[in-house]
Every structure is written in C-alpha cells, then in structure tokens.
Length: 207
Image (cartoon, rainbow, N blue to C red; front, side):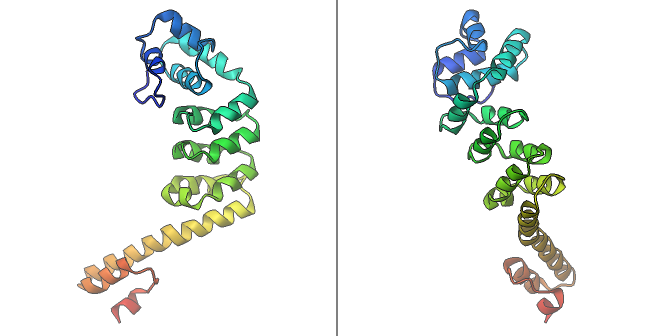
C-alpha cells in the first residue's frame, strides 16, 4: 500500500504491506493495536490511502476521532511520517494550533503546504508560511498559492511578492538578456550577466 514507510518499526512494515495477520491489520485500522502513536498514525494514513475498503473505512473513522492534544504532540515529534503530516494538512476542520505545528515541521511535504496555502481561509496561517523564505524560494508553487489566495494578509502578500521579484523575476529577466546577447554574438557579456546579480541592462552589458 505504501512504497515509503518512514517508521523503522518492523511491525509497521508488516501491517502496512499485508504480511501481518489480518486481525492485526483490522486492530490497527481501529486504532487498538498497541503501538506508539506516530507508528499507528502512519499505518492509519497508509490504510486510508490504500485500496482495501474495510481497512480504508475503519481508518477514516479512527483518524477522525483523534484527540487534538495527543495529535499535536505526535505531529510535533521527530518520529512522525511525512504522509501523516500531509494527511492532516488537508484537514480544514483542525484547530489552528495543529496546522501551525504541521506548517513549521520540516518533514511536511512542500506540495501539501502549497495545497494548504491555496485553500485555507486563515490569513494568519498564510502569513506564517510566508515567513519561511527558504521554503518559498525552493518551492515557487507555494509563492503562487499565497498570492492567489484571497484570504492572504497584506504582510504575507508583501513578503511573497518581494521574494518572487527578487529571486524569480530578476533571474528570468537576466536570463532573457543573456539569451539576447548570445544571439548577437556577445558571449562574454552573456556569461557576465548570468554570473552577476547586479541587474545590469542589456545596454550596460554591451558597453
């Protein structure tokens, strides 16, 4: 069911891949298999994403019944699996505190953060995402999601706009100038533009 199991616990692998007895799978899907919470959540999300109808439905119900306090503690831990973070990132009915924990966890998949940034109506959480400059630079889809979300705050819009202009629009502009210079036979100037962050115009480079 899952090609990437984060847990090092062999029980998790056996249950998820179906080599464990069926009663163990059913117990896990109902949340009653004695395992650490992080391991159990990984199994539940794997079942929920799987194709076995019974395990999928049991897991859906069990995941919906998770206690907010224990869920926050598990999501904050270093043992939580990325698929668990991705699953709960898409749950719009969770308290903001849980989403804050998910958004600040380095293991949360960037694609899930982009989806969250595009869909959430919580401006404060969009602003929280906009504070992570490195994340936005490495994942421009998150930038676009912020800028397209009508619930964005003025501050999150300002940050996203500045990052987009500084790290993407200038870079594209410089590359366009370099391409034009090469087309004119000015390879040295084109190379200088590509290696420079000075923002020179094509005329200045030619000079």
